[in-house]
Length: 263
Image (spheres, rainbow, N blue to C red):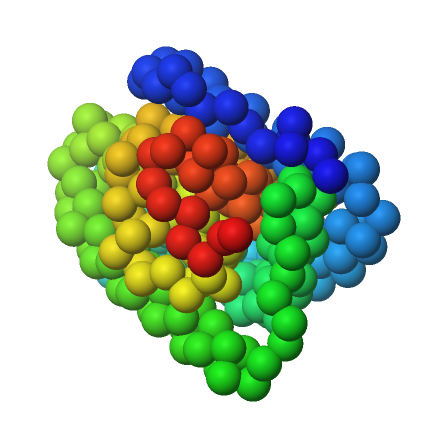
């Protein structure tokens, strides 16, 4: 048992929480390095993620180029500039959405094993015995969480996209707002992993994530940055699952929310 792996989240404060969130992936890597089981799962996830991200990157660039070409005709310099801006913006959106979803879908069968192994490594947790009703209930909860998250995340991007129509400042505002939006939903996704396993409603996941918003944004920004670093982005999924599970346990210990389903 290693309860010291669980982050200590008291006292709360915006700057302190932001720092805790930013450094949580480092703590997750320490947990992975201490567990042969988690190391094995991480290696498998890295191979699958590498293939998924290459496919997402190539597909996103091709689709972004096509959208920009159809939306803006070539001609004067400002049309060329607008086309390049639209192409890059579309690529960022498409790649971010793809990177947040495609690897997750490909790695969905491994998530519960990684999350359970993390909780067991933290101590004060014993995986429940397998049962068919609980297995299907867990699948239903996970699918519900994922679908609601994707819809809400996609709607947010649609609301933010018109910012790109404002010359200069609009592009900067869009980049800042869309990055924050992606960071928040990255944390929601991986906080949802252990909570879906414990059959917790999605609204409870949102309540915990928004209750310590700086903490959620800090973790999300770290994971978002890892998505753009070659080689390291192949480890995002296992690190994110472990970090989300540690956050869940830390929030429970800090009495920021109920540890639903835990002994």
